[in-house]
Image (cartoon, rainbow, N blue to C red; front, side, top):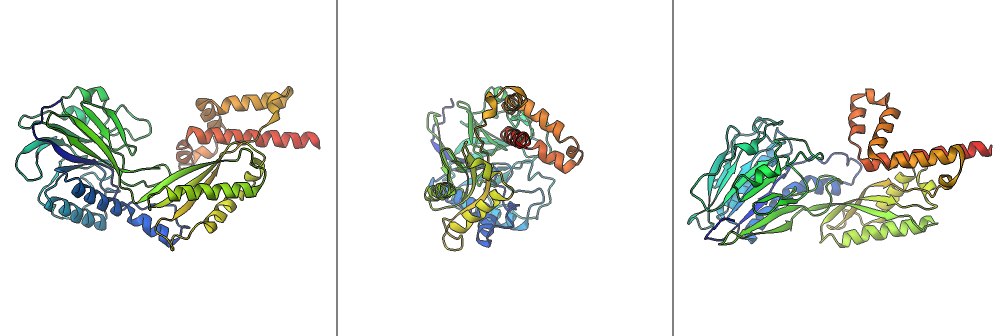
Length: 428
């Protein structure tokens, strides 16, 4: 723990993805599309307000400020203006670029406001962070940007402390311990970061906020604004307070403009469609009320076992339910805190009696259930079943991107359909 002497506050944010296109919402109302299109900029405005409210001495932005290497001019101008507002109030800003916005990307020739420091890609640079009144050095901030989109080198090994400051912050866009859920760019190990001598590793790249270690702190703040139903819940930045004795306190601040939520609804005990409709609408209203006045996009995930399962699997039935929900909620044109059902997924099951049977049906049910509960077996079965389809690159890429939960559900549904068809054949 460093002996700082002068307490200070900084904000750690990453993965702004300004001007993200939010694809796949062509059927959403214009008010939904417009709100989403503006949401990354609204989150940036929220970051500016947070810096002023907290009287932050400086802000570190750990990569992927832009959504694409060829940054939109709109995004560059909005960022330039926002950073200008921060710096004129006495808050410095330190920036690295990541895999989405590497140095090689096309960018306009714009001047950054005084007090904004952008790390280059040829070496790890070091800048002095000053107290908000500009009086003295409170920290050294180190960083390196990506020269191109794909960086496979361990950039963390290049960081070396320099004398002249009481606290040392390393800013890096990287995958720590090769997290399989994310591209393995700038891979490094947690033990390497912990033994490096730095007081705080301000990381970017992983969109879920995570504190991997304390003293020294190794932190992912997550992204500022969720961009799909895979990025649900609170999104924002960490306010980091460092005391005069070097004690670090983290406080997460949710500043997302639009929330993404996945809302499970169980069909257990339901026998009538009216019960399901009432429950789905109630869950949507609960989520809207809990949004803090913000807009919400929600995926309804139907789960559990019950008599309604068979009807939910009928062709087009899920789409009909989704359309009905959209017609039943408040219109996004009428209120700011709207909730829009983005999609509806059916993950339900039926209580098959075939598990207890002897003979082929029982054996099929038991073996299918065992396969569904083993991710490796489920993946192997699906690869075998889709061998012909996998010859198409785009289809293969889509199939490889499915989760273990999705594979399990496909096998369970295939199993239930097979058992149902065999029973019908026996009856005939």
